[in-house]
Image 1 (cartoon, rainbow, N blue to C red):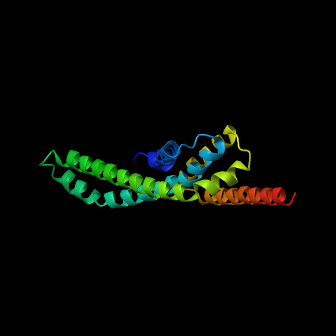
Image 2 (cartoon, helix red, strand yellow):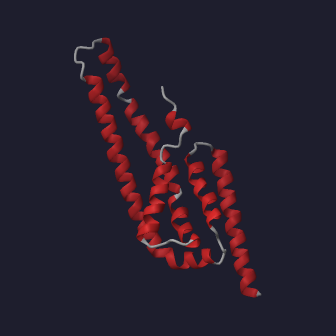
Image 3 (tube, one colour):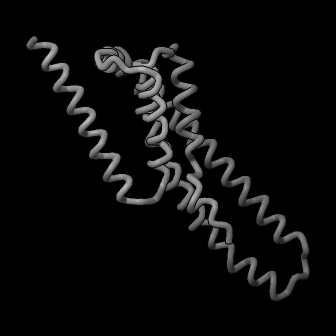
Length: 172
């Protein structure tokens, strides 16, 4: 058994690609603008791991078929046919997942772009902030509850700091 999906986040590329596609489509090129698609796309890494887990469970049902074949290997094309079918199912479902995700992200970005960019612009973000935010998608793809809790608390405190700074700017 290859533990690639266990240790290497399998769908980190989905969140990264979705953020790049969204930023390009909406012409978001400054750091405060680019942070919006990054934030919206980050959950794709987590949702992608759930999809990958479901695909593994579904494809484990083929295990009995391969055992039956191994006991009586008359047709030598059975393993390769199973592998091709498995790869095609993974490809099609991953592409559908990404397409549906991009549609949702485009709709959400179009809906909240102006107020979100105004809010994020008030934080005076630079590119190094985006590098830090970009690494969070990889953390979400890991399967550790402690990472999810740490990330949730971190996002909460950053949002709280942003709101408090806006309140301070408004009253001062």
